[in-house]
Length: 261
Image (tube, rainbow, N blue to C red; front, side, top):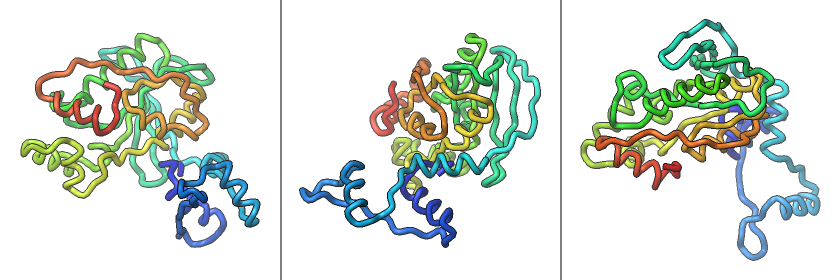
């Protein structure tokens, strides 16, 4: 659940915390009228049948109080074209992957800190690919954080919406054959978006943040960061100019992924 606050993850973590093998069975309880029962009715159901009940947020809070799944490795100065940052290197204790945080100014204990959680895009961030809007979004976020004089850009190493670099390039080939970005990922056997933001939330918490103003066009990112002791007080869009090469890509992000473009 510290990676993804979902019911499947909660079931596995719950039995593991109880000292059992990490295997669970999930079902949804129906009301008498055939609709899915919600929390007030589930509480009554649990009392009637003497069942224990808890919320995912409770399990996350329990684990967060006892576990830390990112480790701060090093901090160095990083002057950039957009301003001066402190570069924090973190390592995931889950898979050994490294993630980064670009920190501008003193952020620990500050309220309503400007934050961008950015997923790695080698082609866009490094090579300036015009097939996506990733590079311009990253650089615009760095510019806005530097201009604010206080903020964080978390750089998560989850290429291609979490599918990895090689599958992403294969997805590009499918897009050249007429598939959109979602259809290409699905044809390769992946969900349309495999990114997870729990470790990013832990990095922000390690930096001493509690309330943040989140730079994103993606409502799913807001949900992915919730439940980790962070409060998102404002969602701010990142506005970048489209080009002829990414028009279809942006249309798909808006229509199939719900991005606010």
